[in-house]
Length: 563
Image (cartoon, rainbow, N blue to C red):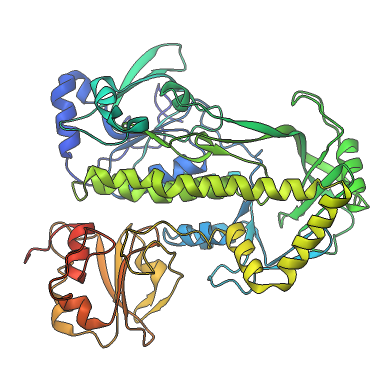
């Protein structure tokens, strides 16, 4: 940790210099704040240096956006963490940043789960390059994401605590829609008041602020958003231990009576144990010893597997909560600051990383002058329903796990039988657990593929997720598409240079698809003739239902030089 304010890295107080010039937003803020304050202006302030904040800040910096990452803790990645599973969709997103292989080398991959002693979930048939889940401690994920953020030039401020956020006139103007959606005319600036390690106070300014500071989010509190919900499990025990007996199933979870336990291997000789007993409602501060973990495990799984050598134990409670909005004016929420849920399904870190992947490229496009600020409204529109769905599914798993009455036990048996023997039900359940089943709402009249996830398809030059690296859009065209029009897509025009790559299907598919930087379909059409010429007299809205390739590219990336 370098510098008096806990700056990170060897690039001085402000980290690396931005890869681009000052944006219109930054120039406006310089004029508003004056020369003295302007030197501390950053396009984005991200609050919270957990996985969500690290990924988001790294994405922005990689796109050339000046970004400061504020964290109230000292610069120390803790080796104690609750999250430990990375699912297929998150691995795909990390692959699009060149990080997945490194992470897989640090953890253990599992391609099957065993739940309640009768539900066998196989992941090896997933339509993904990552047809498995990765068991890896959160701190290992943070190490990889932090290294990338440092290399990209993120400015770190550790031991810096947010005390207030002021959007000034901008916040008042932004209240035209519920929860402050929309931008309004003129420049905008957010002032973040912080307390530093020496007890002093500072003002930081930015065009946008993103709170990724966890379930006790200071950002969420500062913008006045409630966090409605309830406590679901009063006392969860967690331990990383060695086992003398190896479980028959690689990943095992079961519930008997009032007890539930879950075991997963880290691959380094230690296993993660998570459990709870419905009859033990004690505060988080109550001391935890290995005997209690052993007892809960024996009750739920029938044995304790010779549990010993706990390197970490913790007790916590589990809530189900979601903010009613993910945005107020120029302030956004992501990760646990926006939603928290039970540990069932291992969704917490994954959902937050998906939030970051959705928001990062949109902020970069707007701040780079390539997109209308209205694009930022789609963050909440797309991610809030996913957060709500995760709350329902993870809560459902807990309720099934804690089934006790005859009718709830019968319901659990029926549902496990359904998932085991009915392929559509199994596909839906696996899609929700792994994240590959989620889609985003498409504009009216859009192609059926718009808003859907694109797997790592094979292109004539390699894999899709390699082409997505660098935060780029990828236009995939049929092999028999006319070469003349393809050349006019103008990947070298000012608005598209470095932001668009044109690729070709390795297969004989005739669909032309524009893939967003987060791996979802922005626009698509069947057949090359309509893709190039459009339909006579056809009038379409901007974006996902644009009638031609060039119209879609203009809507998402700006006009080409020849337009």
